[in-house]
Image 1: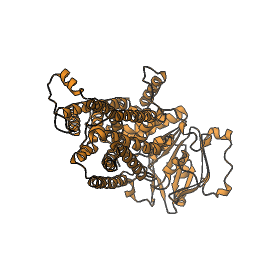
Image 2: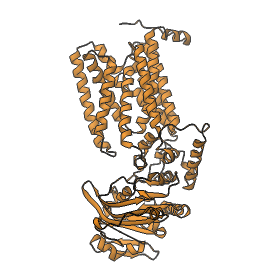
Image 3: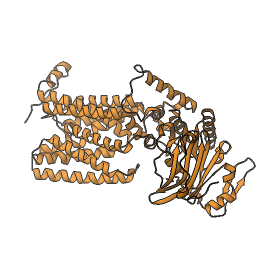
Image 4: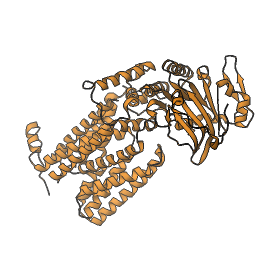
Length: 291
Length: 295
């Protein structure tokens, strides 16, 4: 468990050879958003291939951590190295799935096209038609592969706005996977899904993480669908973040200290964890836009 | 200038010959062709980006632009392009700093629209010109399109389409999926502002044919029709341009053989095509399964 930390006492930024195996190295990081401190003194080191969950109440800075990793939000203090470079430098090797409202029903563009954007959507110029260009054919093949991987082939050619939340989510995961990234950042990917889909998508992510050695950082509201797969947990509350193995962090005494309020963690007979007594009002579940 | 009404003979060859007898009509057809292709392509993107309201406001801004140009003795085109570009800049500034603040953005756009309409009528009042000028500004005309104007349109369309071609994929990315696009290094804000500028130029060009109020006949309706038929971006863009082209030709021909303004005809054909496609596709792929996760 790593709590607190003065920026002046921050360890030296990781050296290159260390950083290669270290997918994320955040040290003594302070973050502000709109003048407000979101969290401070975060130390987080993630090894390549780990499966990490980011937990905590709304507004605690879970999505903010992903933005820091992507280099979209500069740190007030501390350092953030990602995939061996400064945060933001290696984003082409990161697949990102932002917290998402689903696509509006009027979005008349195929799921396949949305996946394709993940592959070459950042390129300027028009692609050549497939009969003229080998790379276009390769791109189409790659898109087909990732769609197959997430099990979305049956509906990939329908307009994405007409698909269900679970179907859209699978296609978006395929989009994030299109370039064969070394890291996946997912912001509440399970939130809009029903329970069977949550379990299926969680299992899919675990397969990607272990089979391809992809580092997965997943923001979640409910830890239980992914609990069995997790190497590590980052729990944010009260402007601080605790890092550790799931059962080291999701404990009554640890969370009580973090929240500054009495918290109990109950374990059900099937191994599910239930956090009781968080100051978060239950109604807050309806609006989950905690940027 | 008055033109005798041509009579429609229902013989395609002789009608085509009649239609292309006068140079002004040939130039109108040329200008219409250029404008239709540009409007179809830009319109498809506008509909996809849900910036129809912004497009409409730019069209309304075209009206005071033309009126101000008439008032100061400049060519109308100068007013159209000048005001629409300024308007696009204002819209881009109004929506700046917001990730996707649709509601406050549309409030700012609406404010601008009201101002533009008011200014247009003041300029027309000051100009004290003939009523025919006002009608042409609002509802379009195919008279008096010069060869020079056609050439200008051609360059503008060429430039616009070249920019869209270069920016195609990042623009599509930023339109459909702004969060991910930004994370991947797509300059989403620059593209947003750039697209508004392209939209402004396309509106200004289209307004010269259809008039300020009927720009949508070429900008929205063909694109909306195409999007009902296909969800493939490439096919959709080509279809939108093709539909715009067909309704423009039909509209110009109908206006030539009738006393009614070209804007009316283009609008009617455009709407007719949309209704036909809507009826044909009803109950088909539009049976929507709403996303469950719309929180």
